[in-house]
Amino acid sequence: MGSRTAIHLAEIENDGYTIIENVMSDDLMSRIREELAPYCQGKLLGRNNFEGTHTERVYALLAKAPSVAEIIEHPATLALIDQLLPPNYLLSAALSILVHPGETPQPFHYDDGIAGLPVFKPRPRFGVSTIWAFDDFTDTNGATEVIPGSHRWAEDREAREAEVVKVLMPAGSVVVFDGALIHRGGANTSAADRLAITPQYCNPGLRQIENMVLAVPPDVASRYSERIQNMLGYNIIEPSFMGYVDGVHPKKLIDQSYQGRKYRPELPPS
Ligand SMILES: O=C(O)CCC(=O)C(=O)O
Image (spheres, protein in one colour):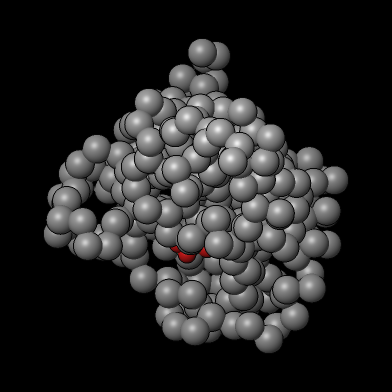
């Protein structure tokens, strides 16, 4: 492992987050912006204070903006996440967040809570989130705000305003954080928009936040790399059977000739 990777991992352990600066090329940023543009026409504003009533969110991104795959499987972030989550981890969510002027702070929250599962913090890591900056994250334009160290807090400890740290970073950078880190989108008191994309990853045994195999059906998933297909859920957890479809590997829905592990012998032709 390189020394930069080790430093980033230590920051995630200690503070709950780390920033990797200037890893997205201008070309990739502009391709993604172009692909997102049809979905960001100022019409679909958030439905509540969490989504943000001055914010446009686009979900099911891999069905809409194919270049987003390049940040979901970006080597700079996966080098860290590969160390933080077990093999075969899943893409739990991937959405864009365009924060317009006038937006107020989001409620504090963390990303890897599992509704209905009676397991409370502090606990083993369930997920890792990333937020990619497409505009400079500044003091005033709605930069993500984190509570350092809160990934280790007990469930009932509440964040205080005085503990907030803004994630300031230039466009093209990414913040990688423990799924249990308390954070929120900040208020946008500037005159400019702030665009970010947040791919979030989870332990393969957990339910994804977005139902990815419905959001990205087999014919669309077939256009992506095997790594992306696996992260969407077109995979099983070896050596168990978890994730099978109709008794076979889910990759068969993408590629009928897929010769991966079989869970029952092929029936002889009748
Ligand atoms: O927009 C941001 O900076 C953070 C958004 C966020 O944390 C979320 O919606 O889960």
